[in-house]
Amino acid sequence: MLKARLISAAVMVPLVVAGILLLPTPAIALVMALIIGAGLWEWSRMVPLQATMAQFAFIGAGLLLAGLVWIVSPAAVISPLLFAAFLWWLWVLYWLTHPAFSAQPGLKIVAGYLVMLPAWAALVVLHGRAADGPLITLYLLVVVWLADSGAYFSGRRWGNRKLAPVISPGKTWEGVYGAIAASALFALVAGLLYSHSMVWTAGLMLVSIVAVMFSIVGDLLESLMKRQSGIKDSSQLIPGHGGILDRIDSLTAAAPVFLLGLQWMQL
Image 1: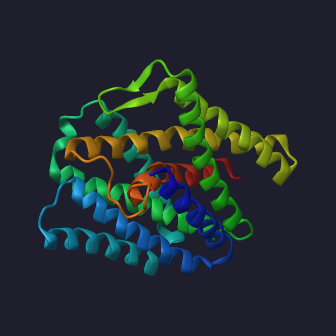
Image 2 (image 1 turned 90 degrees about the vertical axis):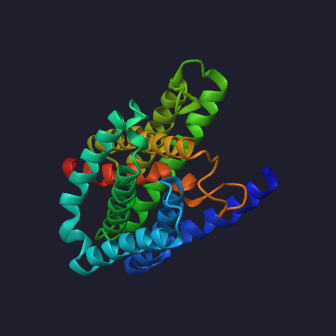
């Protein structure tokens, strides 16, 4: 398992970094749409939608919505999408405290689109920023990765108080603090190197910390979905790592919140 995990990471990370930095935004939008399609398939299994036609209809509707957003222009509709995503993730905080309520299949179907589509649009718009789009997109990915690592190591070393024992027994408040500390430190260094301005860097740190806090909510939501559907991983598409959603659950919440924060702070 560990060997497969390391090999997968060694292949995926360079590909992701190279793709973000070298591909034009339309190509990034297409690649991310394919990833979103795979994520929707995994989500359909957690609803669960048993019939193959129902799964295809669910995925097709999501990709159709993404296509319509692309035709209209993600930049033109991103503001209402970000606002809707922000309200949605605030609602998820309530959802996580009422697991029985969230067992309704109809709500889970709508939730799949609210999780996936704003994240896709946010990443496309972020990548398409005039001067620093690819760089700031890569920055967001690294922040989320470091937050996950910080949560894991601090949770293992100091973890004592459970964050959400019913949903994910392994997560602790100490892990949350580790995630925030890791992301804040990286934002401080990256912001100063990029801008040489403490004011700009402070804004980036604030936006990054808030995005990381929401990324934990995204992680918990997928954990709840998996627990209710009785599965350990969203799929086995990535050897040693589980499914697509197991890799992007944090990012789905962090991306729209991060972009909204950048716009609000005018960074």
